[in-house]
Length: 403
Ligand code: EZ4
Ligand code: CO
Image 1: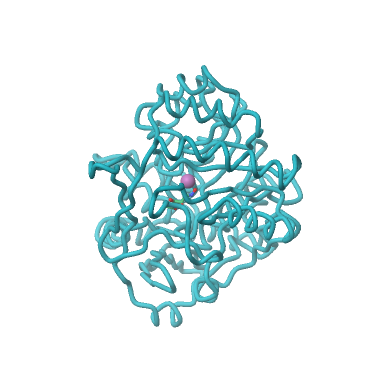
Image 2 (image 1 turned 90 degrees about the vertical axis):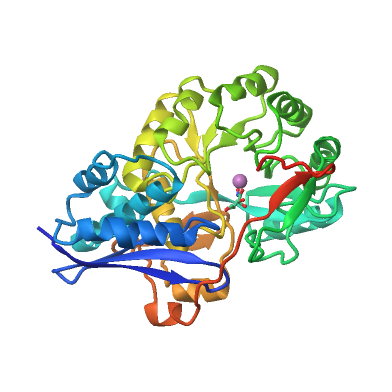
């Protein structure tokens, strides 16, 4: 028995907001979990402080599965991003504690390494094709074997996914939601041209990825996937809003471009049909937003049966705690695909001392016991919470459009 004696929520904003759970035990071993939900941070902080932490005190930290079942199955209101991020934070912290108590890096408890490192992709973005491809070349020079390309759409003032600061792309950019204007017609015209130019300039070896951010209808997505076929993408991400899983049948019926979806999914129920019907190739659910390692493991196991691989969300709004958890998880499963890797700011990395490291296109979780990441609470306290929202999206006539 390793008794939970204390648990607290730490909210900090070293460049962007992060919510972190720290759990302490009577053996002096502590663990950390990430509970950050972009633009809704304080809702998860409250869910943890007001509702989960009182139930955790006195429990056995070793009973990870039972705690997960208690928090999920034992609750009348299930699922949803707030609930599942909070459960994930508890789950990550308990896995961290268990591995530290065993004196092993977490991946050893998950079955040991299946590979030497985790293939990652970086984010190249620019206002123009030329700028985007220059950025891509910068990543290739750093050893990246996979790059996501996002480019400004000619005729539109601003495009989500294209940042002014090339290194530290932060999409939650204002204290009230800012507005982007979207045109599907313009986007569908320019995107295949971007990838034609990319293959011409970057050659055939580099893996190229693209994120649609849920902006198309099924038939529009099918057309884009078909138009992109000659450029052999690694994946086309979030082509349509995925509430309606059967929508992917239409895209699939028209194209062999590999499909990825799921960074906003919170549970296996969000992707069950997508996986069982083999409508996708990569599942992007994250340790943080899909209920922790305990639940993501179930999703990955189901996916493995259907030859679907993982491609975990790894944007800057997931803290280094989630990155560490994703790396221990990814190195230990047979159907790992790729890991998204966006750079955190130096301030963020200082608040979260971590052992994972990048080399030659791959990330490595490191050999420190547990997750190998901690939070410097004194430093975190120097960066108070700042309300920040993701932008919204309107069509040229002013009507609201999908994320
Ligand atoms: O828009 O993480 O693939 N990455 C992405 C990200 C998401 C943000 C939202 O919180 O789509 O940029
Ligand atoms: Co995405």
